[in-house]
Amino acid sequence: MADEDDIILSELDDEELVLQMHDDLYDGLKEEIEEGVRILLDRGWAPYDVLTKALVAGMTIVGADFRDGILFVPEVLLAANAMKAGMAILKPLLAETGAPKVGKMVIGTVKGDIHDIGKNLVGMMMEGAGFEVVDIGINNPVENYIAALEREEADILGMSALLTTTMPYMKVVIDTMKEKGMRDDYIVLVGGAPLNEEFGKAIGADAYCRDAAVAVQTAKDFISRKHNKLAAG
Ligand code: B1M
Image (cartoon, rainbow, N blue to C red; front, side, top):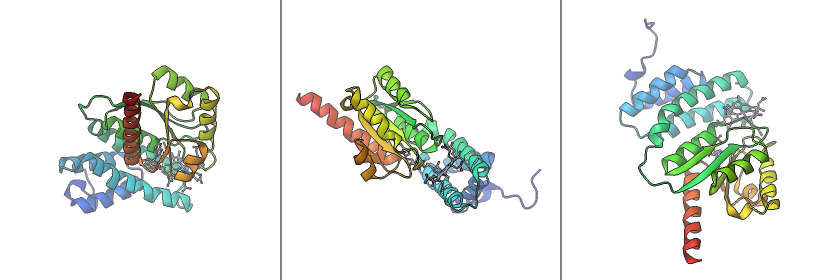
């Protein structure tokens, strides 16, 4: 039975509910996040808005307090688990599309790095836009990327890194692709909070993607350029 001071999520208006979800994410309350996501969807919210306004915005607050030493790894892990539970509900909705597959992407987080929320989000949004996505997970050495690209006959390689100490590994992957003479066979997109456009250029990626929506648009642009080139040639 609910305590008198328990908050009934369904009784909050949209704005209050979103703020409460930020708090619940901060506190790592998985079930409350799942309930909040369902309520917003029932109220007609677009899955993408639930994702960005309730979940990603909440995780930004967690990130700031993690940086400032107010939150520590165990709490952040709980928040991440709550976020993932909310994303799991949204995933089939974001991926719902009858569109023919526009291209195939292999995506993974680089060696030494276990952050996967951003990568998962990019994968979900790419699927939603009609791409086939092969997610090779976290902590990937160069061999994993190369094997997956060849095995899957992918068009795009997506790499994610969230640490300043792991982002240089993306260059190792691209340099290895060059050595093997396979770099130009793929569109290489990179992303993650510490990266920027300059870094993307410096390591030889085709593009840096600030967020999942940019990743989708960039992938679409590169794929259509590739098709135009093939048609012209
Ligand atoms: Co970590 N962590 N963490 N962490 N963690 C950061 C990244 C940090 C910035 C926190 C901080 O200090 N403010 C900091 C890095 C500092 C630095 O490198 N300069 C940090 C640290 C230090 C660490 C540890 C070293 C902490 C420790 O152990 N002392 C440790 C490292 C572990 C390791 O990887 N070896 C660690 C551990 C963890 C947890 C396990 C607790 C947990 C991860 C859980 C998980 O992912 N399953 C965690 C979390 C959750 C974070 C923060 C708080 C949130 C990351 C996140 O999920 N954001 C993060 C703070 C922050 O980023 N502000 C932090 C939400 C997500 C939607 O955004 O991942 O940026 P993001 O993805 C975006 C874009 O970047 C882009 O699109 C996404 C969607 O829009 N994008 C791509 C991402 N990948 C892409 C790939 C693409 C395209 C776009 O390919 C085409």
